[in-house]
Image 1 (tube, one colour):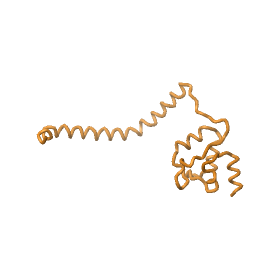
Image 2 (cartoon, rainbow, N blue to C red):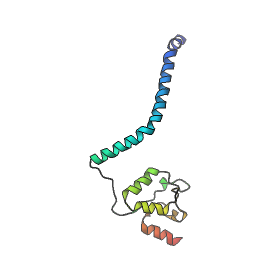
Image 3 (cartoon, one colour):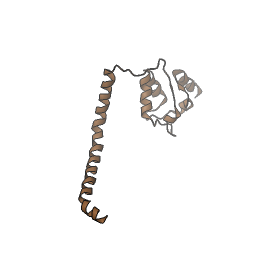
Image 4 (tube, one colour):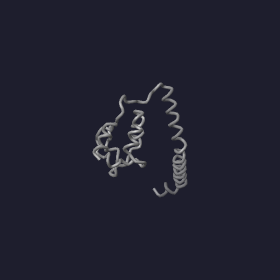
Length: 127
């Protein structure tokens, strides 16, 4: 076994060096390739005639799993999806969350409930 290692040390070092170089290039290229991939996906989305899903009435479910224990949004993908499903959702989100995407205390009663203009008005009255 020792003879095998001594004969192939240079090969093992070359493989290790190649792997290290590959990992360095891979990590640095993500900064460039991720936006390019997203842009290509959007182009394909348009060319295929796809459309974003829109709900007919404004309102969304405030899923407790999407917030951490401090009521801060931990799932930014969910937040983006909510803003895209109806034009009025952005206004609702801006009303119930602060600038750091932490749920305002008076709207914590909406956890696990539907967030609509009516439910926000009800929460405002209860304050």
